[in-house]
Image 1 (cartoon, rainbow over the protein chains, first blue to last red):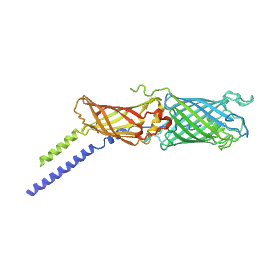
Image 2: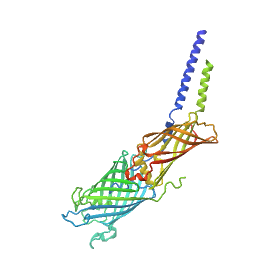
Image 3: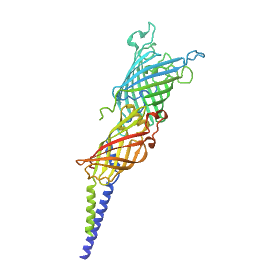
Image 4: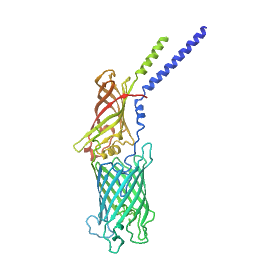
Length: 309
Length: 180
């Protein structure tokens, strides 16, 4: 009897001790990191990869990037190059192509733009829509944008040429831009492209071209990144030699100003022209080497803080 | 002996019961940078904060990419070039409200002491806060100054004039009961 009651007592104490340790453990857990509790609260917020590229163009070709709603980009894209003549008396450089452009973000996903080039007298307008946004932890693995451009070739043509018909002067470029921000420093883009050229001077030349573009960005510092781009044309023009446009450049941001410097073989700044009609390969001889410069000033028409409070 | 253990258990239980937490899910944090070149202002209305009313511990977690700026480009630069929110998505604060008595109705001014982490850098902070209790609802507000240099944020020499060396930070949290 005595032994039994003693045994019971021991068991009771054991039970109490175990309960006690359990409670102790609970109170310990309770006093645990409050930040962990907040981390759990954060989880359901979905966010997207920002700034896969810094501007709507990588160098000369379009990137997946659209601009935020209510921002207007005023830009001047300039290409300088020399003619192969041994002696030339031009001031500064022999040739110059300048495209002035305005681009406006209707929404965070929709960008409209117009521009005009001086050298090849092409006027162009484009629309770009960001279809899919790359998620940060979950969601889509890539960003996809759709791009459509129309360009009007305004240069003088001989009377008998097919270009006398107005409808022949329009060219169209459609692109599916697919990009991935692989790390916070490195982004890559692949852009399947379809080009319909309005003016075809030689009957053997195709009117429709298929091309694929490759682009990349590597962030060198907070404000500077290295960019490069190349387009491969599957069915190029046959009546004269053309080469894929290549570029190597630096993007430099200074608050509202974006500066893009590049070395390229592309003379034109309008899609249908630089993809299918780049006549020189990329090397360091004249007139192949172009020095390119894009200057963009961003004006904000929407104060995002307004109406927040 | 048994009574003693019972007392301990009860005291534990009572601690459990008292260990009440309150959370703010839509806390407001804003900061200002005033320079002769430009003024930068940003607001974040999704800041999380939790307070343990028993231990007087407080924690705050701020998602950096949730800050809204006047200009869209400022937000991109803030996340991309300065705060690097890809790598450091959050700023956090962990600390203790000194001499805080949750039972006092009305306003009390207390010091909060703790560790603030932003852009991978830690900094010990002591912040004066105003704690208001009204109908069992707590609100904490206050402000402090953050020295940009302390957080290893790189500003290119050309833009030094655009960003203040000391940034004013204001915060206001309104709490509700927290259930696990």
